[in-house]
Image (tube, rainbow, N blue to C red):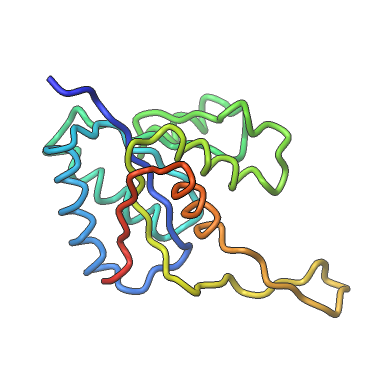
Length: 171
């Protein structure tokens, strides 16, 4: 029997064509389960892509009950039993990586890097040239700045780590 493997999902907060994307994800994820022996799926939060991937993996869990959905938290190092029970309605497990404690605003970037490090395969929804909306440093600041795309940072990190990346962006 093959060794069990892990897959993570990384993608933009907003997605354009959910129906086509859902069909493509279903096919790709089912193939990973049946042919690549992926049994653990790591999820972040905050994006429509994460929500769509969770819905697809949850649907596939009916057919493949051995697969695990794991929510990797970037917030709330310690959670109470009620919040954990709430999370476990959607996921099979959740954890907060100790390495990101004290990371502040970089917690999401560092959490994504940990998910990538723990994964054999990364499914990425990344549109080249995408940039998040411009932001102000503060409400009183008259200037704004262009923040970096967290998905781009994660994608480039996965490339540097020579991870198997499946791009899901041409739907």
